[in-house]
Figure 1 (spheres, one colour):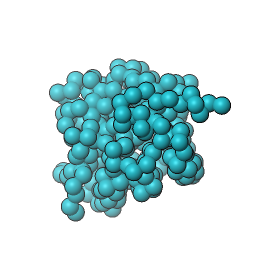
Figure 2 (cartoon, rainbow, N blue to C red):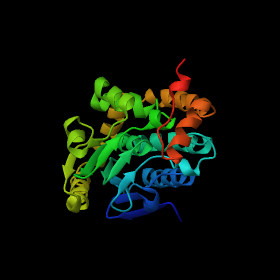
Figure 3 (tube, rainbow, N blue to C red):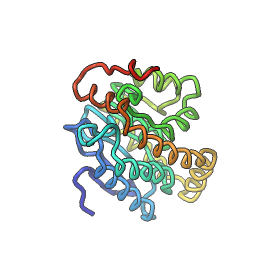
Figure 4 (cartoon, rainbow, N blue to C red):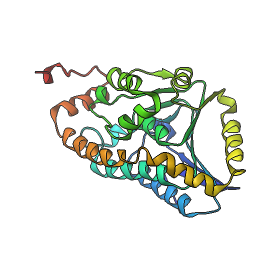
Length: 259
C-alpha cells in the first residue's frame, strides 16, 4: 500500500501508524483519516501483528485534530466526519492492543484519537485538551461519552466546558494517560511495552479487548448521532464564527448567538 499522509510500518510483530503532516502539527484531513483506516484494517487482518502504535511525525505534535484550513466550511467536512467515525471504530475493534505514543500536542480531534486507543504513553512535554466549543466544533461521541468513562464525569465536563490545556503530569494524575516519560526515552518505552504485550497470549488479549469494548460499544451509535448533529451545526453562522475566528487568530464572538 502506498500512502502520502501517513507512514505505515510493520516489523517483528509491531505495526506503526505515523501521521506524517508535521508541518501542520499532524492535523488530519479526509485523506489522512482514510489512509489511517486502511492501515488499521490491514493490521486487523494480519495475524502476524500483535500490537499497534499510533503516533505523530516530528517532535511538536501527536495531532491537533482536523485541518481547519482544508475545510470549505465550518468544522469538519462530511467526508472527513464519515471516515473519522470509521477510524475510531477500527482502532477499538482491531484485534490487537493499540498504544498511542504522544509527543507534544494532543488537541481536539487528535486528543480524541489518543483517548480511543487502548493505552497512552506520553512524553513529559505533552499537552492535552479539547477546543471544539472555542472554534465552532464538538465531538459528542467518543470524545465526550467515552472520555467521561476514562477521566470521570466532572473532569470530562471541565475539559469540554473550559477548553483548557493539561500537562502530561496532570493527564497522568487524572488517568488520561498510562505513563509519562522524558521525551528522549518515549520511543524506547513504547517499544518496551510492545515487547511485553508480544510475550502474552494473543487470543487472551483479543478476547480481553473485546470484553473491555463491550461496556462502551453503545457509544458507537451515539457517535453516529453526534456526527449527524455536528454536520447540521457546521452549517450555522455560529459554527462559521468559530472557524473564522480561529483562521483570523482572534477571539470568537459567540455572545450574539446567546439569546
